[in-house]
Amino acid sequence: MKLLLPPLLGGLTHKGAKIWARADSLAQMHVWLATKEDISDAKYIGAADLLPEDGCAGILPIAGLKADTKYFYAVSLKKIHPSKNDFHAFTTFPKPGAKKTFNFMFGSCYRPADKKGGETFVKLREHIQSDELRFGLFLGDQIYADADKYNGLDKVAVTLDEYRKVYENNWSHEVMRDFLPNLPLFMTLDDHEVDDDWRWRDPSRQWADISILKKITRFLKRRPPQERHLSAERVRAALKAYEEHQAIHAPDPLIPFDADERGNMVLNPQDPASYAYSFTVGGAAFFVLDTRTMRVNMRGEKTMLGKGQWVMLEQWLRDVKDKYKVKFIVSSCSLLHPFFFDVANDRWTGFRAEQQRLLKFLAVNEIEGVRILVGDLHSGHAVTAQLKCPSGKRIPIAEFCASPFEQGSVWLSFGYIPLFSKWLTGQKRHFYRAFNNFGLVHVDFDSPDPTVTFTLHYKRKDGWTTASLTA
Image (tube, rainbow, N blue to C red; front, side, top):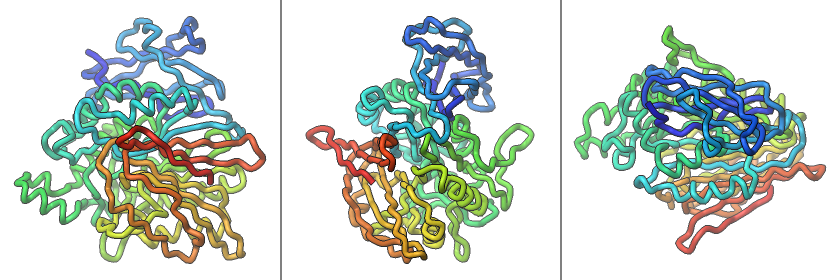
């Protein structure tokens, strides 16, 4: 009995967190907590069962913590006091509304080529202390279940056990074992947690699909039928694995999915649920979108978010409008960066009605201070624009993209074209980089008008360098 994957801390707030781990068999996860760096005051705070029906993964929620306070946690599968080296530091968030300057990181798309893969995380690990990073955002494609050459299976994942093994393959790399426990993380999914560019074919979510090109490619490679087609059963298996490894330690979803008698998610027709959630860090508010599980792409009906998530997003924007000067909308895919030859049409531009709906809502309601964080494109960029409000007011808006952590670049996204919208003006792409990268964000509350600075750290042949923008 051993820890199969490293522990990590998610769902962080000003007064609590969720400790996660996965074992190789039925086990109990025991957790210790300390406030002193020498761990002399470490206390045993409880245990959680790691059950086979959940892939032997689980969480222990901890509560009653002090705001803006540094703690140290450790995990063991035996109720034996861990060594000092087993403890990992984190700092709770300031109380909601408190105007405290902070830094965080974000990015997406991790498909290491081999067990040595992960140079980006080695570099990123250096910034946890030097930049006093409070947390990280993983914006999707934490695994590539469909990448048979890289997922450790030599085939496309189609069963729950296989999806679990892909997580094991990706997160067991030495660099991930070193990184994951040492920075609080918030995660959301994109397509490769299930399959490339997947979506539903009907609003009742009974029929799923992948692209015709992907079907043809796999047919020519003589892949079996279960890899060439995406069944609802395979989607449920992938989402079960996603829940075990990512959703379980996120903040509670705003509209939870129904569950069967075994606690497994049920995709009921017309169910408004999604994995979307929100959280605050002092004076900044975050809404993390689920752009996948409600996505329907069929003739006569197209939606990326679904009705329930739209209700929650618009209500959240109303609620934070005046309470929080800094607002982040977190999306796995780009909103403000159309590009030529976007054949897949898999981003917000492929769902133009909803893209315009969001921009209209922001403009009509004069929502200020919005920055959009995105991944997916296998390149990094910074785009700014102004919302054209019916009153004549112009409100700045910005999109920051960081991807991939480790993947091939997609040069097609270089061909940026301004988004055609009656609700936008003054669009400008400030920089674009098609290299492995990660993003750091500095939220500065030390002046009356808070500022947000995005710095893209990217790897060139001659070493690491940066591009920055304050917006």
